[in-house]
Length: 192
Image (cartoon, rainbow, N blue to C red):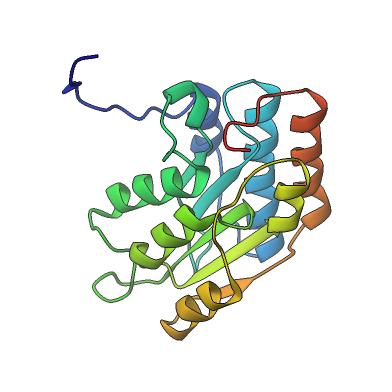
């Protein structure tokens, strides 16, 4: 095997690009979670990736900054979890490596259809978001066979001590149903 030096290109599925283009503000936590659960469900039904969706919103106005879905399998890249994809596109959209305020004029939050795994919690830490909105739980993901890595109560306390707030269980049943649908379709567990 030779060393690959080709540029990496991360492309969102066309259906997601069209959906995002028509999305208005999501003011409430429930609206934000319904949107990311819809992303996760579409990703499963269209066969474009795993059962996870995420989006970054302007915390005050509810304006959608960026959205992402799990692209691990189609891109052959274990780092392309929905949260990481959404955070990368959000940072690109605002033109900064941080989504924190300051230097930006507003705070940003991440909504994710399932509790972040160990890698995604690391991305949350460095991203600059001030809040994470969570649908399905870590236990919901592990129940169908996903390995979420070393996430401990101390992990969350560490992030909370640095100003990141977590809101769990929003639209949990709908988010859990997407995980179950993925399992029922017998899609491969790529990290189980």
